[in-house]
Amino acid sequence: MRPSAAAAGAPGSDEPDEADEPDEGDELDELDELDELDVGWLHAKPGVKWARYGAEVLPAWVADMDFPVPPVVRRALVAAVEGGDLGYPSWHGGTPLRAAFAERMVERYRWAADPAKVRELTDVVQGFQLSLHLASSPGDAVALQTPAYPPFLASITEMGRRLVAVPMEDTAGGWRFDPDRAEAAIAGAGCKVLVVVNPHNPTGRVLDRGELEALAGIAERHDLVVVTDEIHAELAFPPARHVPFASLGPEAARRTITLTSATKAFNLAGIRCALAHVGPDAVRAAWDGAPSHLYGQPGNLSVLATLAAWRDGGPWAGAVLGRLRARRDEVVARLAAEAPAARLHPPEGTYLAWIDLSAYGLGDDPAAAVLAAGRVALGHGPDFGPGGQGFARLNFATSPAVLSGVLDRLVGALAGRDGPGR
Ligand SMILES: Cc1ncc(COP(=O)(O)O)c(C=O)c1O
Image 1: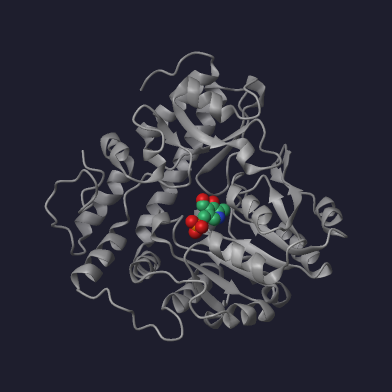
Image 2: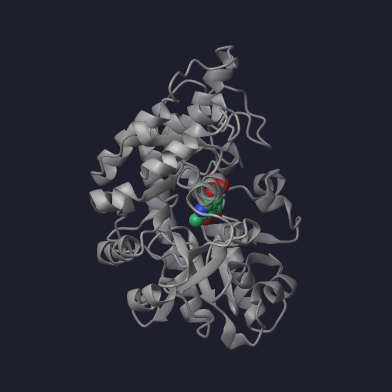
């Protein structure tokens, strides 16, 4: 089957290119087909998720969803190309994303972000590195909750900063951190930057207002710039609610750099487009003081894709969030029933399950053993730094059938037998 009724030009689709016009019927078909992804189409996808491990492996590792491009984005891109102009855009004083971002923050979170403080990026990791570059110096320390998104750990080291690990703690009530312990680690360490990743990758925790306020207090007492990565904000499952760090109040806002993009919620990681809302005046001045092309900028098509997703992608994103929640529940239920020694706290956001497999005696990196025995590719726990040993990260953003295959193989590998070969 096709991955989606309206996926004109999608790999493996030989359908006529008939769906360029918005059409309610197409929209409904597309939503229906979020549940029926064609495995042949998935395996033929050129992206890294399905290409890296080949046809024998089911991939549940890198943070891409398996769903096709949202139809509103596809239509916007087709219209732009067919409109015939991929020349230099006419964007003076910033792209239209600055205003679109500010509008979205007010609508979703009642945060009055300032469009004049928004800067375009090619990706969030670039924004992270730029923030470290402008708000700290080699030798300074950077506090980061661990386990952590691997490129952030690597960036800290590559840029000659020192990591101050703030451990997320595995409690009966879920993943928490101890603000007193965090402050003790930060105090006297020569810290200049506090990194907050919320919703948190890999644990899936959505920090509540009280926890964020505790972090804001630490930042204020130790005069830290806060770099907050909120790329998964729109993937919080109610009743969990995302609170932008910079919305906590004027003091938090003036020391916070917020990094985000449409790429996680709308499955567009390859478009290379992200935003920074740069609260600290000194950092923004340094940012703007750089030679005009030094930091690059996103291309026309990625800006248009982001605008289309934000302006018209609500129904698609809502439908996806419902599916992700159902898939999460499936992961939790099946592991509880079939691999009860696998421990996880149901993620409150993201489409990533952070699973403690240490009871299975598979060593520090159970994903490696599970790949070999079960032919399913999970994220490797040790890649996420301190606290990652014995864990694996499972991406459940896929169809019920593919997830069922992933879980069959995982459970089979954990049971010490070969995967069932699906
Ligand atoms: C927490 C987090 N931040 C950033 C990124 C990467 O964003 P980008 O591709 O815009 O650099 C990811 C990707 O998985 C992520 O999970």
